Image (cartoon, rainbow, N blue to C red; front, side, top):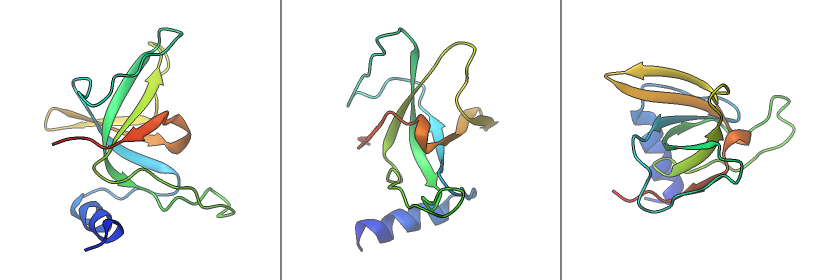
Length: 111
């Protein structure tokens, strides 16, 4: 099974569907051991595990952008008064739907 097929299979297992340039992440409670990012302004860096991604097309479907892989980690920053994306809780876990432009970087997440 190719990486793309495996990614699509994982996404189909999620009960949520994401569209466009949006990414569904499960907020990580701790900084991943693989990488700790520091903001020079002192803003908080939040990490999430990617559970679903949109098709990568912008609103006008004028361009296709690469999206992070399902199962990878993403990092994004937020200030105390500026929360990134929309969020919800399920079974005590925090989930976010963030825009691709909020992502600083994506990296493989160990198991």
